[in-house]
Image 1 (tube, rainbow, N blue to C red):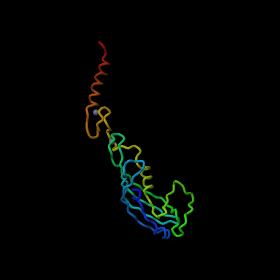
Image 2: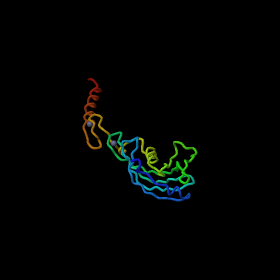
Image 3: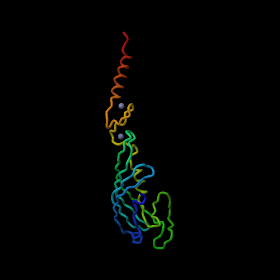
Image 4: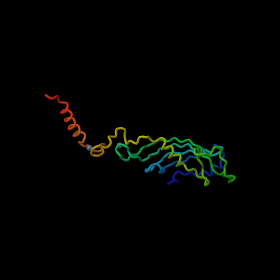
Length: 178
Ligand SMILES: [Zn+2]
Ligand SMILES: [Zn+2]
């Protein structure tokens, strides 16, 4: 699954800067932080820069989620506009390891096999752009606190019974004593 969003960029890395390559994406990836899979579709424009490859991706991601309210599974659709530069770990011409300035956690690298793997950055964008509250819909009714049924799908009488009995008892208690 980790290889689902790989692009071979050896030819592009040998080309002069400004050269472009357009790829389309349709794959499924899996995040460590989610039990659900993520379907990704769209297009990826790869442009050779002076030092690496610039990625401009226009993707739509569909990630499975569980509603925090009614516990049902649903799919959240997220539009992703990715703009990131990838740096090659190894110089393709000389075969030497590149001394990369400011190399750190925030940068993305092209592996020694000259494969650009987009899945990490896609999952980062998905986790940043997916809504914090997992709710299957704005008007999710959730679960009945008394009998546990999903109120989006079924009705129960718990509330009504509760209301009528409690209200009756309450009214009774406020009834002025004669
Ligand atoms: Zn729900
Ligand atoms: Zn109920």
